[in-house]
Length: 529
Image (tube, rainbow, N blue to C red; front, side):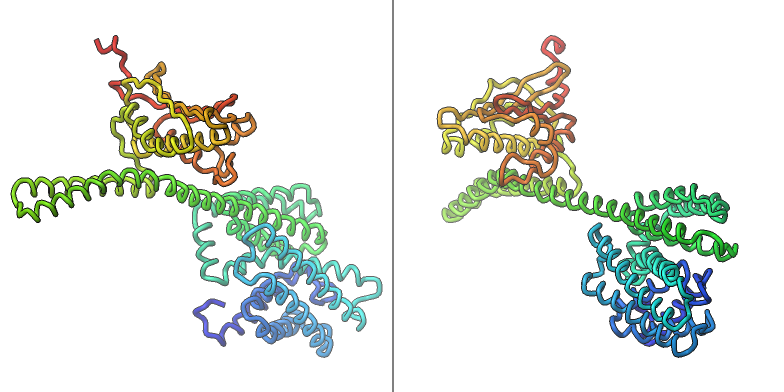
């Protein structure tokens, strides 16, 4: 079934592997027939059907007939064996066809809904298949009167458990992408640790299993939960299959034919489903986390686009001005110091523009900051100039508290992004107020302990206590069109600078963040003397 095998070698390879599975799990058969507690070979056949479709029918039929002859000695006779094998191929093929229609891609076990759908199709199809198979054997007298239900339960549960436990791992192994994911997930020392734990637990409790005492079997959940919680579905399918293989080996090796197989089968099935469910949940959480990081990075790109436009505006405007000056000087025939001075200024401004782009690129790649001493008054004045035109257009009064000589070590671009986000939120909040009552206050003040507190207050309706507790969570926003990522990004930036950002509950909007002052600014005038 490997892609490197020839097209024609896949079929005998499938038949050989099918026979190996059948022989290994031919334990405690009823009446010498193919009615055993564990049947993982149909799982192999289903995966083969999913890959090849109806072309899998003939090799599957050949595999079933070969197993009857080589493993069981064809106890039902040639005619009935042919009829029963044909029925099983049709029944299994119906399950495979249903799975092919329902799962058009290779992502059969990507989420809980798919897992439950797969399990439901397998269990319903197996029940239907078992009813037909047992009916054929019963009508021909191969099953004694009154034993039909017992045989149905043994065969149906055996097929179901074998498929539920074995099919996910086989499905993972048949694709290059699945093998790569499995290798990346479990190729580590931790895998040996939880497999060793599973072996130890089996060794510890197997004696009680032989006595039909299952009170310690729940310890087998420990290695499965360990594998699923650490390595997701890939670890779960490996751990579950390894445990089932060990149980089959121990039962076959010890000739434990009097144990209560039904309980052991159901325990094995529950072990598999719980492990797969936990593994899929872990994978889903990791996928959501990855998508959230990607979304926040895109949100950061949108937020930083405004900063990029603002920062590039000045050097680009200067470049345009110096370019026109050079053009004017060339028209006058100037080639002396004036032209050289204008060209020098153009080089400087182009370097400034390149520096802005480089810093933003580094921020997106690694979150790196370029710290510099930033005056709080200059920071506030610069951001206020950017908002003055739109505030004037909407009738918003911007109040700037009297500046103080305070400085911080910070990445100016990133702090401007935080202030820009807070002022934009404040603008949205006050637009619901009538003109004349739209006011936004921006102030910087010194706190004890060498800290600077920047506050943005608005005359809007304020923030409720229920919203304040969730305001800095991703995708939580008080605006209908908001993504709910601006404040998350702003808090991350402030915390990266060693500060804190929070919202206060009140009758009007209040956002504050605190940053450590630069060393010189943190020293009081009396201490400087």
